[in-house]
Image (cartoon, rainbow, N blue to C red; front, side, top):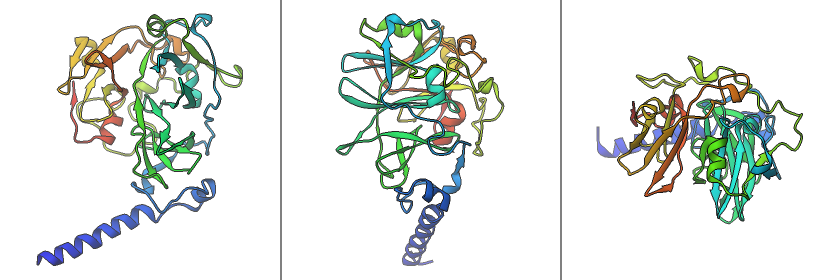
Length: 324
């Protein structure tokens, strides 16, 4: 076949692919997200599943309430998302994040969004500034690869939480900056924080069963919830791995638990210590199995990292190795 014919066919094929990706938005989505520009998309709508709740059915936290760490009593081994930014410490306990998944906050003048996807065990903190505006995020009630899809209230663009990337709408292809944070035990956070450290607390303590786990034994399940993709080879789908935002590799937590310290080819140093409950095991989070604490540093400074399930890493980086 002539080279020009191949070029024309390739162009037509690319148009068909583009059309198939952007032309099938359900009318119900358009009614639910009237500001979203559904003509722009980087993923097929067929990859997206309803997780059950509608838009904001899992309510994000706006204008969060905090108390000093010194005033709170939390079991030492309970997990929190610890953030140190602009000289300030804040902690976001998973006993709260499990029920809300997103907190729109600021720390030292920097607007941030703290996120946790229980179905992926993915705790990620984003700078919510993008191209001169500050975005506020909520939950769409939808999943892709079993991962939380967020939306911003300014444009109603859909965002993939695991990547921090806009996937449907005006801001498709845009990527949020990820801020270093630790998924760590309450004891470890207190040990490194100062007297001014603040901790997220519920505004209405009795509106949710804070401290309890609505996903009992999920991290022992054989298959992920609402996931129809391929599974990683040689590792259980819901075994934890650690990776970085580049997603060029992952290390199993089982290996890190054995070796205690691993240095990746890019210079990132991962360390593991015991003493953190799984938030997805027992009915009471503080009674969950010990999955340990992971810290990622480069040249002695914290860098962004994610402790997530193996299937999540594989879904978004199918050709990247998982070192066991």
